[in-house]
Image 1 (cartoon, each protein chain N blue to C red):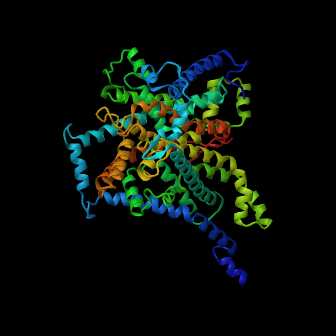
Image 2: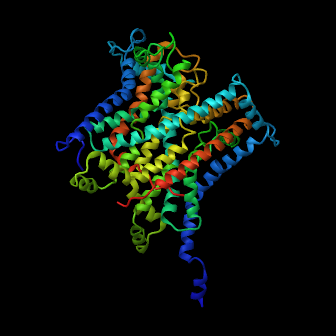
Image 3: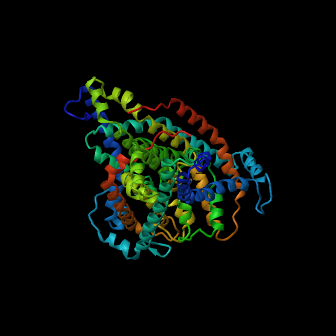
Length: 319
Length: 290
């Protein structure tokens, strides 16, 4: 009888003890997530529909629309459009051009080209130095008498006297693009090398024995074997299209008539100005929250479609 | 595995190797030049730096490095040593709470069956792959209301997120450890915590160390969080940014700034160089479905 009643219980005592352990174990991370992610994001949505006193309103969105409807003299509208345009361009450059090149260069380094160990350290140095130090040094080198400015002048690029590449409207964004290309040619090195090193050597060796050349091994063996990692990184890249490149803040501060602004830069700058103004006054959260919601709405479909495409071409390879 | 640059490589492989080697040298120079330029100028007098910042230093002023520590480099009355200590505690606390939180969640989701397990996994994937942006002001409002802004004693709560990339890497590793290990431990009478700490965690130590090092590098260089939430406890990255972006900046301090920047970079470059192999073989993630 006792056995029967135990059988009809959904979970045994052993399992219930396990559940208790598991729920106690995950309680802190879940609670932290509920407060600092779920609540924050819900709060952000509600703030977009409230005025300074907390009353419901659509004024934040009206203000946003007005800034777009305005002519080119409307600084805020121009800034937002510039940020969207620049972010899409940089993301496209990263996703379509630099990412595939990064996979290839990582593979070549993984196949132990001469000096691969030293090269990897050289490539990671900008990341190790950190965005602040790296950007400050680049700013010096791109100033009116810096090495980068002199080099581009030598190629015939017109840079106004006493002005650097990063403060001149005509060259500031192009310089940012150049920096991104140099950094991105060997991007995602750590994660991809980890993935390549997990492919058993025997697979490469049997391809060699079968007479497969370097590029054939790369395209038909290496890439399919690490495709799950590539797909994951592509998904992250898709997701980061709106938050990446906020370090433009360090390179230019949005200078050159703010023509270097990106969405990441814009959102960081807004949060920073709220943080600074909170010392002396009560900050207004409604408009920034509305802007965030608007930018989420226009980027979310792009990301979802992109994810669908990546998932479709995704196939697990058993190794 | 055949080395691309081996003696047995065929002609097309040799051409590929030479082309990439040339490209790699070019990229390496572009990447490393700013650091060499900074080291060179950190050893100059200001006059020599201004007269020609590209010439090799003749001054060899190593005392510029001493001057960084003797009060000539400071931000907001916090000396360099103070900034360094702030960087250290922020790295230790932020990485510790984040890794502990991610480990707890990843371990539970990867190795136990319980109601809600799938939901948690889907949430992690959702959070990491769907861009919900613009929550910065709301996050600041919450932390401000909770009096966590500029409060080192409580700010760590906001850093202890377990739903991030570390979860994805750890989840894969915990999944990879055979259930036979924990089953054997249970049969021997070990409890859940003993099984975790004595059986499972030792097997994922290389992965944990790789995560800790990569996170530490990121946090060491993080100016954004400090600039918004911990302005009264500046770290090195924020201090270096503010040092020559504030009104009181003196042009003559540039060699000192370069020396400070070089000192700040060295621990991280050494740390990475020593652990490169460990990081490269243990940082991987794949198969996001959800």
